[in-house]
Image 1 (cartoon, rainbow over the protein chains, first blue to last red):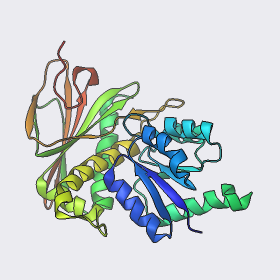
Image 2: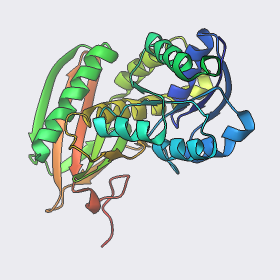
Image 3: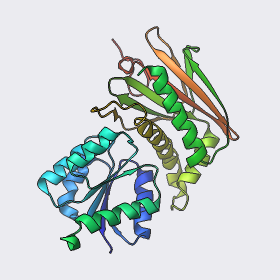
Image 4: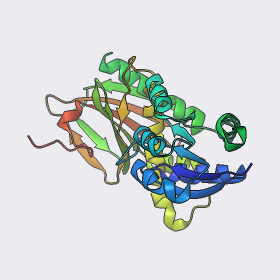
Length: 127
Length: 169
């Protein structure tokens, strides 16, 4: 299944790598933004099937952005992609409404597996 | 947890990154605490703050050849123009530090408290940093076949701004 995906990461390097991997996996990148605030502003414009969200970003971090997007759009599907390995951050991300958590550095296979898991469990076709 | 233990975790994560992710041949790591009163930042330095019960800055300072080599590895397969190369060198430096420090937070986490790290910033000019009496410097010089990386852990963080200049009191 081809998904419309929005990438949220302040690193152009990671955004470009993610974009290449997701495109190879057959998905469309509808928008890339570098802050949580921009993600919040742009969610409604693009209504992506899935968001990949970094945590450490300027202006608004990824946990806060996830919380805010989920408040206004409970149907939003968000996977956190971050270097934070601490348990508390995973708990905070899940509590904010994220459906998956990928630790950097990561491989394409891990990305594919996590997206498939999220879409099987929470995707529109699973309702 | 004392600073030395935290620094050791960060050094270990740095070594693992250089070997496992950057595929570099790490020859030697020289570690020191407060044995120097002056730090020399190289041409490209990435800096990130850690804020929890501890307040520290971590800096990675790269020889040009090393950051160029790691950038090549990390951007393999990506379409990058000549004009973008310099930007991606900076991005690589920031992302290396972000991965090392972010991954290391799992080594010194405390239950119930998330450790926050700041977005990495990049300093492009070589500069020196002199140690004042209340500051502490931990340094690790990591030597590879193609050049050196200096890892600095500097604190307490409230003495410095994010470019490692002393704050005016």
